[in-house]
Image (cartoon, rainbow, N blue to C red; front, side):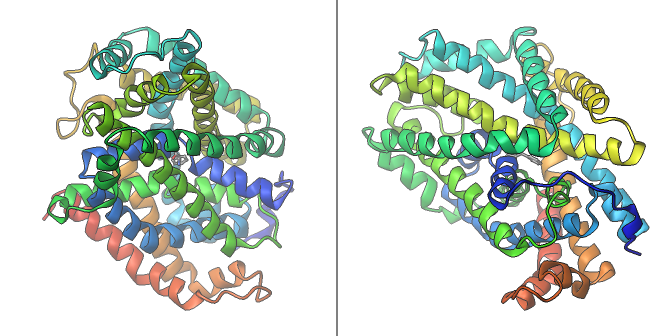
Length: 452
Ligand code: PHE
């Protein structure tokens, strides 16, 4: 049922490196810099990292290749892609669009925090290393009913501004310069953090697993984090793959993107957790960890304020290269399916998502006693539903779709560019996608949600 007549001329990536940078740009973002370190901190450090790696190998690489394959095959965004291959799976694409809505709504709130911290750094606030003071500053900011929402709005306007510019004109151009700069900057900060007194305690915490810390919750958290960090499970990589040309090598791309993503997450962990132990912060400090800990590190660096400004600016760009991919999924759905023009779709949808993010921000302060799910505040509840339920569900359905409905042979034909490329791990990948990955996701899901 693959209908080539649905394929219309599409914007394409200007170059291979442009694509890798843009797709890594989607993957590398607040998930690596902000979420990974604090999730590791909250979920037992090394135990979480170990499980994260296991899931990365079983599910991460497998699904990255799967999504890029579906995208390039159909040259459509998720809903259209599923529909064109098998109508019964259209809803999986729709779940992805919904997940994009939800994730961007709280992502943009955190993006706003980053902008606030750039401003703080510019005004020279990073001269303090006292955990109490830094924690207090952060909390009084995020619990304010108005200020964080204004920054959330600014972040959303930046995101939709870039999306309006289109793929090669917007996304690709920025990624080329900013991704490598972020990498260099992170390394410098990591080095400073690792040379602080007592830093090795943080390294041990992050890298040496304490097996007694592994529970169903930890495993579900790690599963959700792999999906979130790699931008999998909602069709972001289907969308990006849809802009790839037919002679590109999907196999190497789906190895490179997860490797880059994981490297940055680990570097972020090694920049933040040693400092946590060195300055006496709480490793279980939660979403504030990045914002509370790193200013203390900057205070111990020559030209710390300058570093702070550059660093938070780069975090902002990393967040933007991810948020644009989230908005892109939603926008390309409306553009492809409802034939809206890109500009109008970006503005209207960006506006709606902004409004959806407001309760997440208010949930930090004014509405902090509203606890929709499992005692979590609004922000964490939206994150939980999107990252730990919708994304894994989307990923599992993709495995089932390829393995059992569309057919591994068709997938392999697309992956190898109709036999032109050699895919040495074809057998392993087929086995993973058909049996291991979907079962692993299901088991983690059931365990983590405590259904049994
Ligand atoms: N992977 C992005 C990050 O780590 C977030 C994201 C999730 C982007 C899902 C697109 C889709 O910040």
